[in-house]
Structures are given as structure tokens and as C-alpha cells.
Image (cartoon, each protein chain N blue to C red):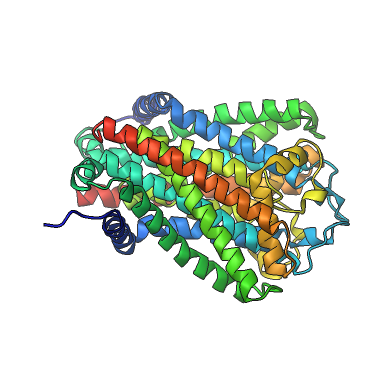
Length: 260
Length: 264
């Protein structure tokens, strides 16, 4: 029998995760509903904010919020995948997985692929809803590729962060530990208004927050006005690289613990 | 059995179940801490992130903290609902409810008692949110008595949401089922006047949805005490919808409990 490669391990795990979500809507629906609800609440309920003096985004408030919700769904897609990793450890499946997969780094890759796949579905639905809600798109094809690529990077970073926690704790109890920092990172960025309209400590926090630059670049892509493109991709890739070290070290810890 | 004796027995049964419910809630510090701190984080972020909204013409106050503070209490009530629902769901899951059915425990005692944990959590949350809000600079135009009425309304709302948690548990039959209903409950908060007054909501369908949503009136009842003073209409509507929520929730839960008991 041939030794399974890293890629085949990743593929098998991603396939399994996809099947779980297709056959268990209970696991998929909440993840899908969160961004949709946020989009409705923010774009629908707060659209008056575009009248605030100094609010200058050419494509309207729906587009302004769409980018945030898209990146939010990407980040939380990663967090929900962390829940799946933790659940696999709690149910003992991960222990068998560690024994069966000689190329164990493929496991982290598999979970990341599954997260990306799941986010792809949510991003598609979200985009359709955005278009129905008359979201204006000022950017061209390349800009949109840039926007969704940024989302993909955020999704991978989110998965690596949450998987790192799950591999260390191996318990679903660590759920708040996975999602609270992600939540803070997201909401300490200019969610509702551009950064220039923030004041006080939240302005300082937003300036230091890497998510601010990803958000600015994403909004720039949608408006067709490139903003902080190199900076945002640099920040995103650096984040994903650091978090991959975090996740793979977590995997080593899980291996040392025997998956228990 | 004479009526006073029956009432005393019912009170004793409620007390027993409520004591167990409170004890269970306090034995999960991780749940307590998360439920108390998460709304505070959202309060800190939103009261600053949305401060610019106070520049909108017609915005009722110049402090977004004052405007947004009631949302923390609503979110706390939502978490209390999840606690009540998850605990009852677990009782169903583990067979505790079936064993209880063999005892003379009355359904009403079980339902009211199960709310004990949710109510105690809501009381702790309310105290923390109020303290943090006052320290952060929130001011009640209605004065100290307004704070008392505010807390009463917040606890009534928590009871209302708690009863909804019981309904979800009895229908789903598991704690996991209750947890997965969380986004739907959150939806009620989102589609309300939590972020802007209804008259400033620009999108037509959202304004209609917020007007039809009872949660808007609960929030506005609490908010009126902070930013307006004594607004009889807002308060009456807030209490009315909170009690209606509680009444409808307990009635539906009683029917669902009877169905579940008959099934077992």
C-alpha cells in the first residue's frame, strides 16, 4: 500500500468536513446566518451614518458594510473550523486520525481547505444577498479577485489561529478563547464609519489593528480605488505565516499528548 | 388538598428546582464570565465606534454610551435564555426529566424553578453592566428611582427571554439544539432599534421590521429612563411586551412540557 501524501491526507480530511456540513445543516446554518444577520443589521439599520459629515465612501453604505461582513465571515469561518478540530479531539476521532496519517501536517492543511471551501459557499451567498440589496460595485474583475483573495487569507489566518488553540486544549470548552480575540480584532477596526471619524482610544486601537488595513484595502477594491493594497496583503500574509507556526506547534503538542 | 397547602407545596417545589438551577449556573464560572464580559466588550466597542452617529440630526442624545447601554442588558437576557434552555435541554438529554416525571413534581414548579438560574445570572449581569455603565459616564435622567425601574424592566425582560429558552429546550430536547438556536435569538436583537432610533432608520423594510419587533420596545423602555427621564408610554410598552413575552413563553412551554411528558 502506498504511503499517503500530505496532499491526500488534506484532501481526505477536507472531503470529510464538507460531507459533515452537507449532512448536518445544524452545523452550517448558524455560521451562514451570522454574516447575513450582521449585513442586514449594519447595512439596513445604520445606513443613515453615510450622512455624517466626513463620511466619504463613493459606493454607499451597503458596499461599505459588505466588505466588513465578508471579512467577518471569513474570520469566523476559521473559528468555526477550530470548533470542529476541538470536537474531533473530544469525540476521539482526532486520536485515530493522528495514528492513520503519517503526514500529519496534512491534517492542518485539510482543516484549512475545508474552512476555505465552506467560506466560499458563504461568500457566494453573501454576495448574492449584497447584489439583491443593491450593493454598488465600482471595482473591476481584478479588484474583485483582490477582495476575495484578501477574504481567503483572513479565512486561512482565522483557521490557523483557532486550530492552534484547539490543538493545544483539545476541548470545545476553549471556544470563547478562539472567538473572543477574533471578535475584538474585527470590531476594533473601523466597522461602522471610516477611521477618520473615529476618535479617542478606539482610533488608536484601530490604527494599530492589522484588520483596519485589510478592511481599507477591501473597501478600496470594491470601490475601484486601490487603498493600502501592498500593505494589506503584506499584513495578511505575515499574519497567516506567523499563525501557521502557531498551528503546527499546536499539532506537535497534540502529537506529544497522543491526541487525548 | 386545600388551596393554601397546594400553594405551599408548589412554592416548595419551585424553590427546590430553582435552588438546583441557581447552583448549576454558579458551578459553571466559565459560562458566567463569558456571558458577563461579552456584552461589555460590545458595549465598549460600539459606544465608541458608533459615537459619530450622535452627529446625525435628530439623534436623541450626545452620548452613544447612554443610548447603547440597554443593549448590554438585552444581550445579557439573551444569554440568560440560553442558560435556562441549555440546562433544561441537558435534563431532557440525560433523562433527568423522565425521572422527575415519576415524582409528584408539578410541571409549573419545574418551569418556574428552571428560570432561577437564568434570573440569578441576569441579576449579576445587570449589576455589573450598571456599575460599568455608571463608571464609564452613563447618566440616568430619571434619577435613582429610574435606575430601580430600569433594573426591574431588565429582569422582566430576562424572565421573558428565559421562558423562550425553556420553549426551545422542550421543543429541541437537547442543549445542543438550544445552542444552535442562538443566531435566531440574536436576530431579534439585530432587527431592532438597538443601534439607531426607529425614526432615524433610513431603510424602509428595516424600520418596519424594527417597529414590529417587540425587542425594540423593551430596549426603548429601558433607554427612555437614561436619556429622556420618565416617559410613561415607552415604559408601559416596555413592560407590556416583556410581560407578554414571559406569558406567551411560559404558556407555550407548559404545553410543550405536557406533550413531552406524554411522549415519555
